[in-house]
Length: 180
Ligand code: FES
Image (cartoon, rainbow, N blue to C red; front, side):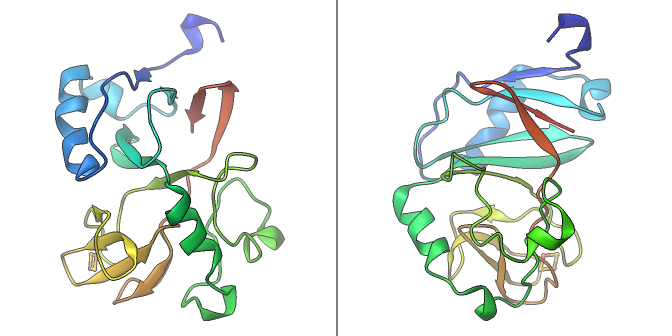
């Protein structure tokens, strides 16, 4: 990728604890100090090499938080154990998949890197930002009106009508993803 084509690159060098990683990601973003124009860029690149198992970072894309989580084996297992037919929203909401493939995308991890999950961190109810690793299903919990998402970001309980959205993204190298 030519540097001129790279709108903004997040480099996940700041290691964060697994517990409360989502909250701790904000100081990390501040430290990166993107200016206002960077926050509304059409596409961003994120170096994910430093996100260890059980860790998560939050980056800004088009003014919205995007959660990038390297899920633990337990989290992946829990997501895989759920039958699609038991989900309130059986659509994966995955911008990377064709519409007819979405309903069968059970755990929503990145192809070939199942532990990795990339999601827009905006509650599908009324737009609050869910808290990570909380709620009844160990995924994300939206405190505004009590929506519980599981470890694959799928709505399991509460008023939110849809799973957390998965933005369009692709790998531009082994450890860099371009979102948007
Ligand atoms: Fe998340 Fe209402 S905005 S539950």
